[in-house]
Length: 318
Image (tube, rainbow, N blue to C red):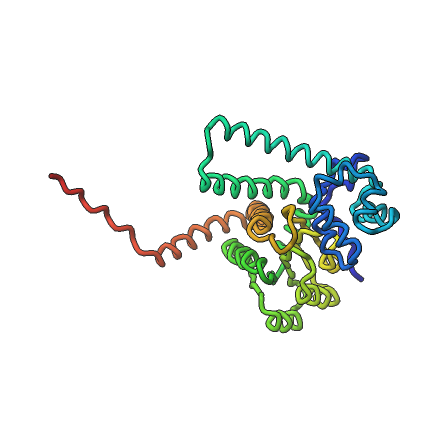
């Protein structure tokens, strides 16, 4: 029997005014819904954020060609009490965004016209910083604690990731090896099927998927769960199918854009969660002192793989 999850985002759905939720996290997740009506409605709201806060429920229903009842059901899907909460959450988020834009415009005006390349550099840093801050508010401490306890008790950790999540899974694999944990990383569906068929109790499957809808990962989790094997997943959608077949769910941040444009910023959030886990594992490991010693040995072994620094050539004097 599948254990009931104690995690998800760990945050209240709403505080009566919609302030407690990240509205865009919810909207992007809804835009991936298999329910085409709800997905289309969510995408329209994402594309017309500035309009929705000022629209009545009847006006929104008319523009999106759905009924008012459908709009109300959509609000409930987002974890809101009703349409009023949606408008308030969007208005607040728009106000914060406008404030940031005004502050940015003021700073640019003071410093003169900004160099185009400097603007690119600044924007990239801003976006990734926003993802890190959002991750901090989304990660559930009880879920994180549960994941750490599960990993510490594991005989073998099978890390699973496909597409843009594969490098994150491989990074976690390398980090776990450095901590002295027995782990492997899998991004080939056929290899994963063989691993799942032969996995033994005591193993842990750790999946990383932005959408939470990767078929091969979900099928592997279903098989592992039927054999009593623990499953941990990092995903940006707390309502995705992957969360239904996992024992522990950690929510990563997602940008305010459709899934096709989610690349580096989403990966930053996933990597941040991996980093949280690795630091906590090192601190909570029963053989923490040995880990520090073994890490020093590992660093010396890796140093052998590098060419020695060349001494700087003496400067010529005239």
